Image 1 (tube, rainbow, N blue to C red):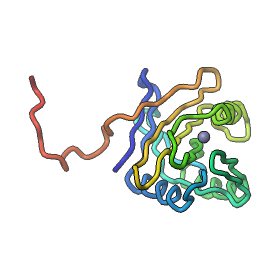
Image 2 (image 1 turned 45 degrees about the horizontal axis):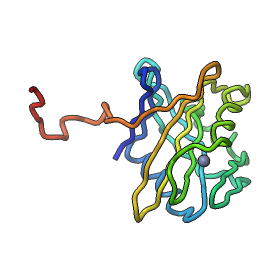
Image 3 (image 1 turned 90 degrees about the horizontal axis):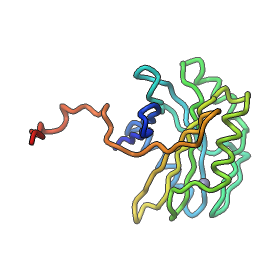
Length: 176
Ligand SMILES: [Zn+2]
């Protein structure tokens, strides 16, 4: 399964391939009833309108988490991003997990994204935030947001992934 999210105005999109979704869910499963999270890194493709996630980090060692909160640490994150940077993969934003709960952003989540958008340290004026909610028994749900530095926090809505090879699917006549 891949994930694809797009803003209503079509300006921002976020995509995770099947391997990246699996990596993300693996980290959620191993966190159990605790929140977890990390960084999503990748590159902008298709005339820079699609943020393609190529790497998903787990929580840095100095992260702290409870059942309803997560504070991502920084230890090792700079080195991790430095290595990716050499492969032309960059910091795109943050992800975190709401165990057995809805993937709805808290005030803290929104404040964190504003901080990152205005911080010069991240060199990321439009950070993305991906929230995974749920659990393996009932399934997972996802919400994604972008925080433009000079704009409002915007939701990217889940939709069909236009970059999944359509040849893998039986052709269906959708006319009429
Ligand atoms: Zn949250």
